[in-house]
Length: 142
View 1 (cartoon, helix red, strand yellow):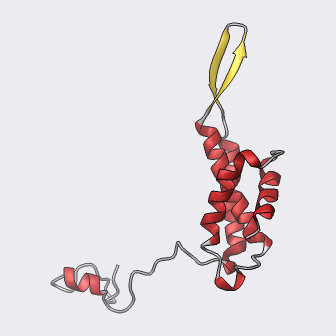
View 2 (cartoon, rainbow, N blue to C red):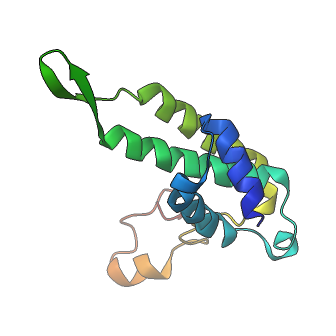
């Protein structure tokens, strides 16, 4: 993956001027997505994969920002104020979701899990002595 490309897209998504303070988020996202890229796209992943990676970095960034406090100076002194970043976090989550959809053909699906197929799973067959509990009327495990 092209780190510079991800940094550039991250800056576009967040409106920040410099990526250096946010390299932790960018590198974490790069590590996460790099292992998902299908072998045939490892060398030259398309831009949608870079955008997906940048969106994850932005989501990490906004989550970190929302956890911190901002100090405001007033005539009475200083006061800690909680930042309201819910709109930015929601937008970042939407970006992650959309770019993931666009990148689906280039990435391994880590969210899909098939527990078993057939009339009855081995795992249920050993734990289920009657053979009827945990199965539907068609004999499929539920």
